[in-house]
Length: 551
Image (cartoon, rainbow, N blue to C red):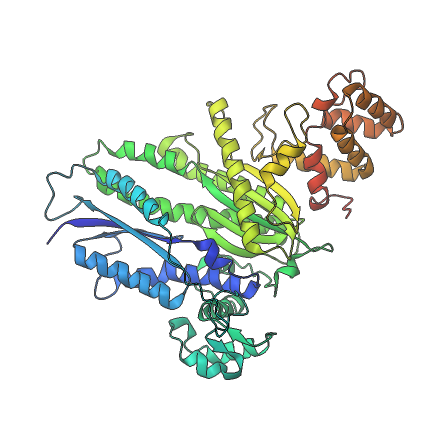
């Protein structure tokens, strides 16, 4: 028996696999395929013959695109990595796997006297190695020749299926999820509008996987989580079905905060225990399961709040819900509200779990980026932009922790309405309209109300918009204030203009400006420092529900 190893397997380039096309049936199937592979197929390889790893002893955790496990010899480890890569290549061509390993002395028969690391040190080292593997990139095959037919869904891969010879072509493609589903798949594709009828293997298998979800046969993932709790989402046929009367949709991407700090502090608790390594590994397995469940449960609570309690059909596409990640599509008027509720509930659930372990600090929260855009915007661009905003939200949380080290930790949310310009440079755009001397926006906003003057909760923004709609506050006045702040005028000229405007307003509207925008009718010396959230309000005014939902 040789050295013992810890192995890490991670699914990478998920965006490229999920969003190879804007066709909803393909995206939905891609998401389900990854769930099946990550949580079922990988486990079957590890625990089945010939490897027969023991789930309780050898597997640290499997889920959310990651797997960590122990292997007792080098050849077995290499064979397992090969088999996992092969099953991904077979069932989900286009998906990519990164693998890394490191030696460990934990329960090794032949311990290496030069290897003094404990298991938590080995796992830290493994994290660095897998990050290197993920950054290496993957080879791509670019087939751009006149005699190659391209897939009409992704426009990238060579077509391997022709609708005119559908059954014969499908029979030549291997894959367990295709078995016993050929007739159903033939019927689905026969109803699909094609120009020439050419499909690649990757898109075919994604469409096939999507049939399991639509028929409510999903055996894994968030769709099953909802189904087990009596919630049945309405399955839209295209992204356009989520559009409002101006064809806007909502896209959110959320990621957990503070996991690294938490796990680092947890490891310190086990270092002086007699059986610390064993107890630490038990904790890691329980933590991964709890984190995944809490993410799903927080999103389920958001569905209950926004849809079930209001007797509305559950309408959404849950592209990633697991681990500490959420990526989903909703109606534009609901996405900000759903994100706020999800992040709030996630913080509560994680606090309940972590408090007995390390007390109030460090806290695990979630930061989110929300994009509201035209339904025709390529979905991979929506994901890219949502990640930009999510990183801005994380940066705001980091700055907040640095400035207020003793304050309660919370997540942040950032948002942007981008119309159909999916490739707009959000950072450059914001810098062009808002400066410290003349501020127009206050985003990102915190999830929890921290009672700090320079950190505003997202609920306060919703409150302002709801009140403005309730009062039927003239939206043209808000636009005028925004334009006045941007006007190339001296500040005293702006003061005179705002005085003239206020003199024509109803008293209730003047009180609203004073209460929510720090307007002081007796002092206009700092006009440019008033209405600092005016662009935030204008941008999402039509996407926050109120008594006077205007368009």
